[in-house]
Image (cartoon, rainbow, N blue to C red; front, side, top):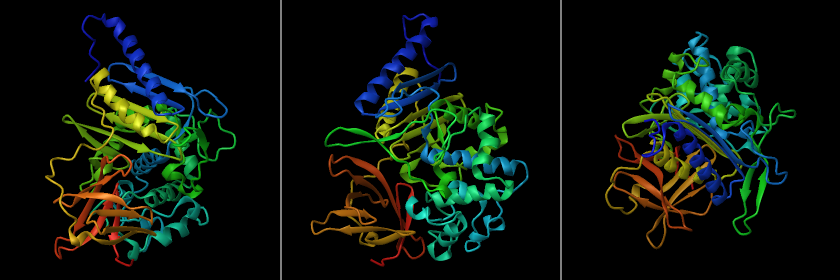
Length: 452
């Protein structure tokens, strides 16, 4: 719904009043969360506001402006997905054809279709860390991951967030267009959107760039951090942009921009039946997440690079679009606070997270069938029950996090420092054997191996 003029205020003053209140909250929250700089773009469907605060780099003190580009992390993925859909709209590929018809390195998984890559329903592992990926080429990287013995589930039957899937989508763009991914996204999407291109690794950027930052919790010191994305992972996370640029993509997703044909925008928004992303969102389309609030569906994506937090939401019915960038990891908490403020200030129920879980009843003990070791690629997930009977989850050897389990096999993770519960994911029971075969952790699925 559009912004409602507060009682007693003249209509002409309402936009200025809203802008002042939004700016005040952005300034206050950036300081409270120790985020050096942030951008916010709000289109209520009736009026727009572009706001910014702070600095792009805590060392140089260069100001963060509306033109500053922030590392988007995974918010690059909707751009790559839009590229693939534009090619499909032109008849250059079919969303339901096997990816292996274009990429021989995926011949080990002949059932994976193009749409599976974009909706994270292909059963592909997440992929190795960026340092490992830097040592391999794109084809060798995918050939080593996309094998039957590493598949997490049959294609099109479940959801597991996968950077490797978007590496494959980027290589698909290159195979079809004959252009490097950077050139294709620049020519076919960024320029039509009016976005000045910026990529990780640019040596002569055409616009000011922001650094990501980390905060030393002991000293409170804020310092810049280095981006370390491997070049072959560019289609999954190499873009930099500002909040206004993200809003341009959001407007295209609503069908209100010439940059994307309405049919392409509609196809991106259509939820895939098998895409059950758990704690990440309420559903998933082709490149965008679905968030349900108050009878409406918002579309968008979140992105975290090294020391940045970026978010996009768009609601086609009203035309509302909200975009945020923050150049510190604490920007995620800032974004959640802002989303709550936006409902109070504008009436927009902007979903920062998936909808709260319905009543799952009282917690239960960890079912014995859930204990064991699961794997996603080279990452082990171990579910154990300590001597005190408390269940816990350890990912890749990290310190175990306490689990709170429910009868429907969903679970929360507990922050040991605060005791706060956050939705963690769910266990999957095989409908035939009854054996718990998989665990989903924050959108990533791991398959039982029990190999220790």
